[in-house]
Structures are given as C-alpha cells and as structure tokens.
Amino acid sequence: MVALAALPNVQIVRRIVLAVGALSFVLVWALTSSAHPAGSPAREAIRWIGIAAIVICILGRTWCTLYIGGRKIAQLVTIGPYSVSRNPLYFFAILGAAGMGVQHGSVLTGAVFCTFTWLVFHAVILREESVLASLHGAMFESYVQSTPRFLPNPRLWRDVSTITVMPSKVIRTFGDGLFFLIPIPLDVAVERLQSNGTLPVLLRLF
Image 1 (cartoon, rainbow, N blue to C red):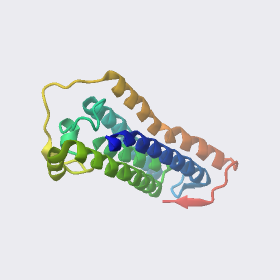
Image 2 (tube, rainbow, N blue to C red):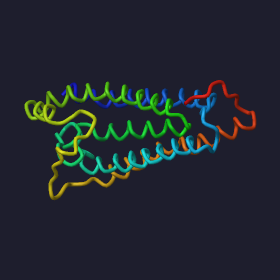
Image 3 (tube, rainbow, N blue to C red):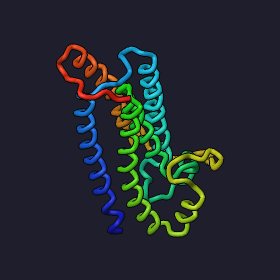
Image 4 (cartoon, rainbow, N blue to C red):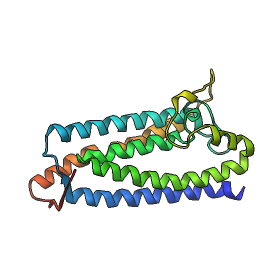
C-alpha cells in the first residue's frame, strides 16, 4: 500500500521533468532551424508526418482512457489497447512527442523528443510495474510474459462486448492531448522571428 500511495508523487515528478525538458527544448528550438529551406517539399513532408503522428497520439490516448480511466493500477486492465501493449497510453504519448519534435522541420529533433519522452516514461513504468506486481501477483506476471511493454502486437487483440466509461477522464485526456499541438504554431512564430532577424539561427538541423 505504501508503494501505491507513492505513485502520485512519481507522476508529479514525471510532469515536472517533462515540463523542464519542454522549456529547454523551446530554448533550443528558438535558436536553431531546419536544414531544409522554409516551404521546401522535404520540410513540409516532415511536418505533415508529424501532424499525423500528433493526431494519432491524441485519438489513441483518448481511446486508451475509455478502457483504463479511473481504473489504473487498482485494476489490471488487459483488454482493448491493453491487450496488444502493456502501456499503450505511453506509447501514443511517445509517438506524439516525436510528432512535436519534427514540427521543427528536422528528423533529429523528432528523435530527441521521442528518446527523451521514452526515458521519462520508462522510469515511471518501472515503478508502476513494481506496484502492479505486488498487487496482482501471478496475473500480472502472466500479462508481462504475454504482452509487450511498448510496441503493440495486433495479433494479441482481445476485447469485451461492453466496458464502463468515465466521461470526465476521457474528456480530460483529450483536453490534455491538445498540448501536443503547441509546436505547430510555435514553429511558425519562431520561423518568422528568425526570418526577420529577431532570433539568431545558431545551428541548422537535419
């Protein structure tokens, strides 16, 4: 029970680390630019792929919350998206982070965003798994053995005919997901400030 009570603190630390990381990346973002010229096919293609990843992230996280909203940790959810991945909510968040990064027009920033987010969530997951193992014992061990931690395996899909949904949790997750859209207008603003000389470009990234 002590471990269970400590989980909210883990989530708070996770949010703080992500916030500090986001602010650091904004600073880097403001002083660098894509090696691909503004408006070039390569730069626009990278951005649109990122936008697609962000949309999938927002919808995917909302979908996951239909199944786990209000039940996380206390109940072992192994159906729907949780039948193909033990952490689909985090998987979609990592995908969204990559989509955020490539709004800079750079594959490198997408990779950095993705890796940083994965490292943060990996630490959280290890803590959560320890609690789940103590609460659910052999059932959780069986789940670990049969279901991948991150990358979904569609062949494992299983579901039930009805689920209990908590609308407030779903709406909150969808609202939180809109945060992933911030880099879209941010990059437009930075690009304009750099083009008129207000912000210096210290480095160009591929």
